[in-house]
Length: 359
Image (cartoon, rainbow, N blue to C red; front, side, top):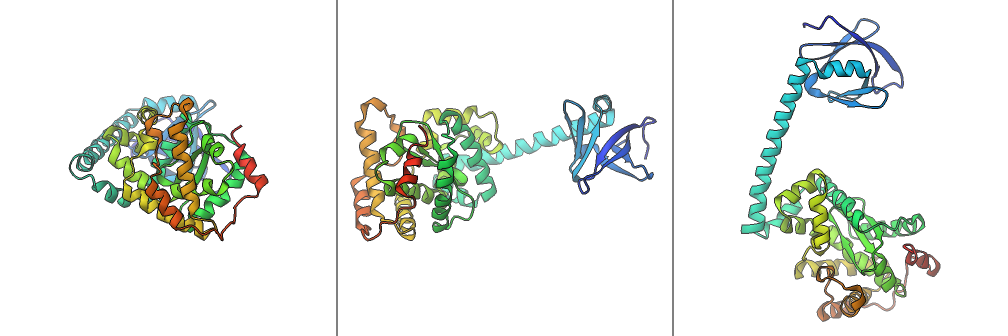
């Protein structure tokens, strides 16, 4: 293999031992040639490497040797950037990426056109065919954008009190992946679930249900039921445009996601009556499993409806009424009432710490 006449010193970490090795680096026809102190050499193909410029030096990693790191001086990294074979390899990678994006965009457009135009029911099927890892990434991307608008309360004590109970509820719902409940600072009383186990509850909801811990947990159970049933992801596929969905998938600039939040689509999701009924039924089961009264969901729904409809000072937009507490749903909750159960997950003192978490 032909190589350049020049070679430069570099530092190499093999990713196995915490030892740095002094090596020489040469630019070959198709990759970096690393030469060890014992004369051994190996090749890092240009098409498989990434170069990151840091303050003191430049770091090179190779997809073939995922844990290994090569440290180059900025001068050598600049020479590499100008080396014709490296430039050609980078151009090839860009072309391949462009083809991949084009292909994925076309495939998504075909699928989503069917979902949004011809076959609305396909959204549910598509949601359940989506790998869980991808749904979690979608949810994390959406949550990061939501937190730019609904500021998290960031109360460590409250988070420590809530987290194990949320995990127990998720286990009762047979959710097999991590679920996170975030308290956010807004006076609007609401709770909602994003894809992949991301859920949020507002300060307004805590204030509204401050005297009814059981109703608060019933609302949380209802949102976890949406998580279990993948209703939020179904709504994403049904409601979002192709460009927005691609941004959500790739974690882009966030402009489209924020526009959805500001427009209300993210927390609305327009669940069907069937989805709400299934979520209610599973919420009853979760509450019973944790020794709580299923009728608490009816109290929570009634309180939410009354607050959203009667408080003119909040100027509640229509899209925040995400869970219309119809008389029928409240009646169904009452039918499942079990007044013998009175087990609260938190003591009165702990509950008051949670209620005041956003103050």
